[in-house]
Amino acid sequence: MKELIVIVDVSGSMYAMGKASVVGNVLSTLSALENLGKENETFTLVKMQWDGTCAAFEAFAEKYNGKNTLLLTDGYALSDNCGTSKTVKTFLEENRDNFFVVLCGGDAMNICALKEFRRVRAINADNVLYAVESFASANGSAENRTEESGDNWK
Image 1 (cartoon, rainbow, N blue to C red):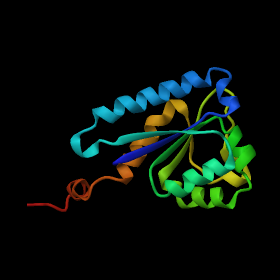
Image 2: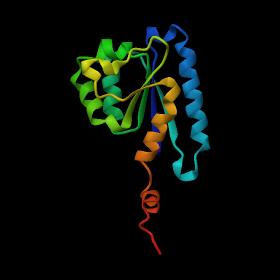
Image 3: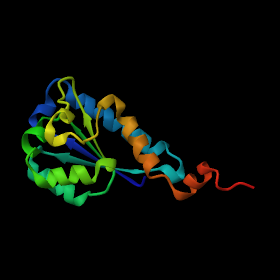
Image 4: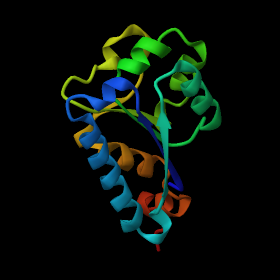
């Protein structure tokens, strides 16, 4: 994994009920991981702010299509503002393996329960390492896959 895109929802609801602290802890964890990996497993963390508008999310979707992406949100801006966007739906369907919604806060909305976002992979903030491991295993180098498969018998 070379680059990990982290989009942080900064809409109004993200400043209530301690969500800013949850987001800060997730970002601290990801920043620490950025420096802990082996040489071939390191990644660069790219952090962006999202204001909760559909237009801004569509711009992210076009720019980061196919890249490993985490969206840190409580789900409200995504469900309220982007539920009818064809661009957002297409992005979420095409990038299912490269995209996680990280639900932050005790009142976070499980967007997977909504028809529009049924196929989105959503996790709670305390499981963010699962997403990183998922990206790393999906993007493993060809050498690592060959070694693990046992194809190099002597």
